[in-house]
Length: 68
Image (cartoon, rainbow, N blue to C red):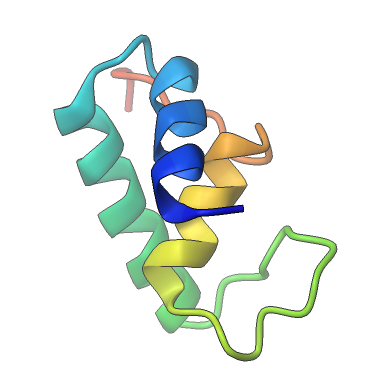
């Protein structure tokens, strides 16, 4: 799936709040870089951490909210 399509799908998950999405992707990408388990069922060896995080959010594997 293209980045634009993933972004659109992920934006739906955060009620179209692009700042919340950007923050969530950044935090999740940092967590992945620090050894967090990747929740996707695909080969992610050639993917950037931010792309992995975006896809996890778009697929609903990560729930994003304003609380904590």
